[in-house]
Image (cartoon, rainbow, N blue to C red):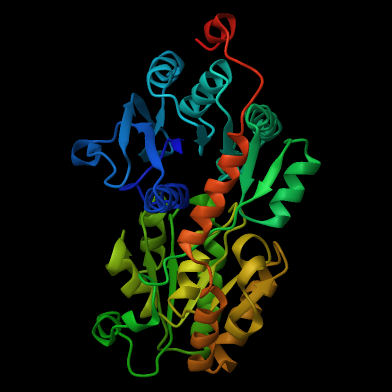
Length: 388
């Protein structure tokens, strides 16, 4: 098939949406599909076309005020109509709900091209954490209207599928997430890196990977580590990532190690060199980092939703009742004190060993193929004018 993938974030940007979308693009291309990536223009060398995509269409964008390293695409319906009249996709996947994504759905409807959307981010929760809680109902309403313009909305878990279906989002389908178990591998554990963190033999290395931002509930990670440290004085806490809360967090905790943004093999090396992953976020749609940690053989403490609910067991960490901060701290301390680290590492790896990226990409293609079956409704000039 010829498939257009529309996303307002894409590598080299680092976040769950960008990495998930690029993984789908690679999987579709490997299966022989022709893929067009539509995304905002990124600074400097980042504008190079995606290597595995047949083509890349760059659009205008603006920086997000609270996420200056990300850009949101500007409305582009007229340009997308012209592009897709010339090179018509068999199906379109819209990964993000910004102006570019909305333009893509309008153009798809005008041209009678089947489209699926992806629900990747709980923007209503983000509004609450940035002091705009009063906007959350309006944000939810917008998301509902947005996704109902697509023939299907794809989500990573059965729980989210059921939640959105009850909220009136329309045809919601589950598409599981995958993890690159070749990249994220316990074999990448590095004693020299651990030594650079100040970890003696047998000392406990605790890690957090992700955006260092208010919506990630990071104060709970700090609290849990301090409780662990009371039992294990030589434990160290390593933070991989960056974000608006980093400077304050570093000033308040001078003993923490901030490794900055890591990519590829270096990111995998940091994961595998740790002994415990603390993931206190309550705002994830899924939490790809949970899969990456488990694939790296790192036991994980997380709340009972998203990726943790799907894949985390007591053999390789703890799932904690959603929002129960005291239980999170207790689980972290109990696991740090009583676990057999080697068996826990093996169990973590085994928990995600079957999440093959190509199998997920093939399932994704099958969903789009189902939507692309011959449709009776043809595009009309009136519909095209309404999309502009």
